Length: 313
Image (tube, rainbow, N blue to C red):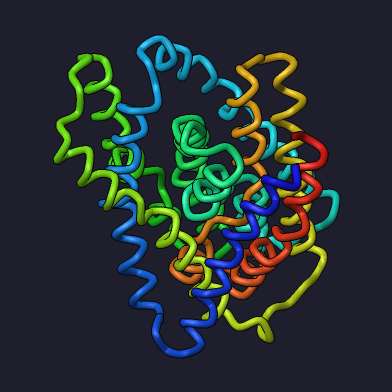
């Protein structure tokens, strides 16, 4: 466990470096946007392609998608619990949708991917992507509608489910890299050395750029502007207690290989989605609550990860 934690310390060291560089005015919100685009559109797709073609055999790939039911069901169960939680603890109507979304949906790329790689190595990436697919489907369908519903003045057609928007999110460059890697793997053709080297160099930037984005967000939010209350605490309970516990308990009903289960548990226990403050602002929801929940979830992760590693690994 401690070896894994020391690897995670490196992750936090990179976040801290990004925080300092933002304080020194090297980074800003524009840089965060650029890094996000680089990760989602270039470095991560190449990373996915490389891992599928180099780390898996055909037989291992066929086993991969058998485990997708576990994250799908666990997210739905966690969402149901979040709904009950809002009723019991009387979460205000103006932040109820954002609360349920943050309680349920995890930061599976910018935080989840680097942490899983630190703990399990690159072998974990395809499993992490399976959870990402389910997580993203929830976030950009039910989650968007819930967030918009926090603003009583918004027209519901503005938050209506959009199949086109969902497909745009699901068929992202990252997942396309994953799909192309699968197809290449199934052909049995070796990856040409120039393409392999290019993917290695560029895809290798994924972790650092993802963590730089997190550091910029923490600095721009401002630690002094954070507000802890019972609802923020409830989000942390959902992220770090309820969500991983549901995955673990469901694994007795929906068995998956040991490494896959560990990756799913770790993915389920990630901080709040990066996009929450932006979406809350865009839909007229409680932006302050979303920002405080996001930042507290990132800062407190340093402590919660010790508990998660101790209990499940």
